[in-house]
Image 1: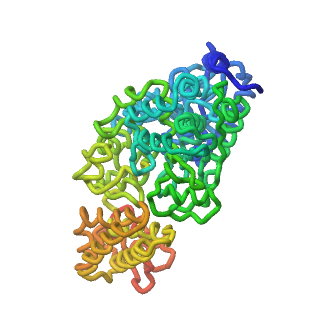
Image 2: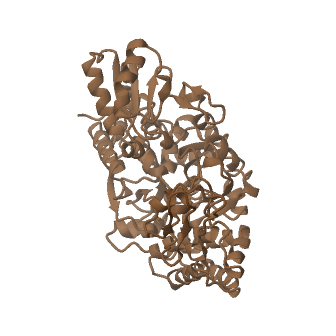
Image 3: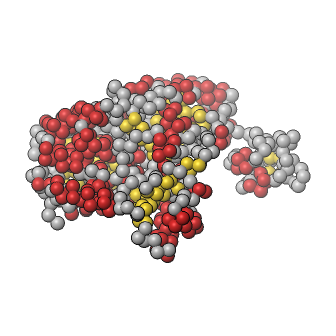
Length: 615
């Protein structure tokens, strides 16, 4: 196929919009992200296709498999257009009744609609659900709306018009200026101004330059980049095309972890479609600019999220950071000028070029512009992917968007920024989503992982969990990170095992300071953050573990002793039947008791008892 022109793009846009918005046709948007696939979304789609065919409704309804809808806790999800009718937790056996109500009778099936946990009211439209109502999708503007495997759907949503404007109407200085004017900062964690980075690379001498996309999302609890790639891969490709014009690059690489098979497959499809339309390759849109993209699959090493380690990995070397300067904008991949941006950063670029940097800069706070995508997980009702304007409070994200803490538990902390971040306690829940504001309370924005913890979380054990991850993922190149994190982990394990000593607290702080100051790369320099933030806000829990040999959250098994209160025990026998170690002694109509010699402290009896008789 010959290269498209702008007129061709506009014609495809118009034709696709007419097709998707045809009068009398109902569009059934089935969530096809990893989360919905994991809960049976594929079976739901297959059942829907079979039912529509069996009922002869093919001329009345069309099925569109989208990427991640965002409301992962409610999957499998289907949204009906027009009307935005939101169906949740659909099972294949629900499909005959759903098709009958929605497509034949023309009325929603109420039992599958969303029910607001606060008001107990049934909500019909997606737009009226609090989870969506507080969001502002920019990077996620196409999630749950288009089929990510059909390029025409993306073009119908102004896809590749930003690239067309950049390639045909702007020079590289204009592009850099608009990105600088937008105030967009890197969404991968560091928050470095994107326009400044591009300016450095643009002015670096050399005929060979590279544009890289970091899709090596390694933080526990993070799924922002994966979901964007699954729902809207062309937005990332278009962002890279614009970046290539800004620095005069002709080759790009997307570094994606192998553990993201669906994201990689959809990227491969998108790249193939873009090449077929001449949107990648030579003389894109007749502009004279050449640019192509390849995918490089990483093995899932956390350290390859660091830019210089990622570049070494693409070069076929072991992924280990190197000292800076020289910075990648001067000497990066294969020692050539290189810019590296993460998935979310690049997904924002097309809209910035189309609408202008001043538009984007008008959203957010004075120092943090635009929106931020967060992956909400942990002890929260609405697990999912959210995008809110910068300046939104953490309280709004957790309670208004996230729906609060399940089972009437109390909020304890939220871990922001993954292993490199820190815990933010309830006292700082009104902190705004702003790079500097979050740093002041001892955390970092990071790439956007937000793990919520309730009152039953042991903060010492949480620090131990993250330090175990960091120590395991340390590349080992520099001694402070390699040996320092190992020593931090040893101390934390000792405290959780009830063997902590008073001097351990000073040792944790001293060692953390040394690791931050002496580590080679940013990952090592931020490694102690979970320890320092939990010491800052939950020092009393450390002291209880050390001085009283007690875990206030009742999570550190070595410090627990289980007993059954005979005055509360109802003699139901549920603990007896559930104990894997046969440590419960019980007879009918008699209170149970625990044989401590057999007890393995698995907590099964504690979790199974409905009467709080076990303490």
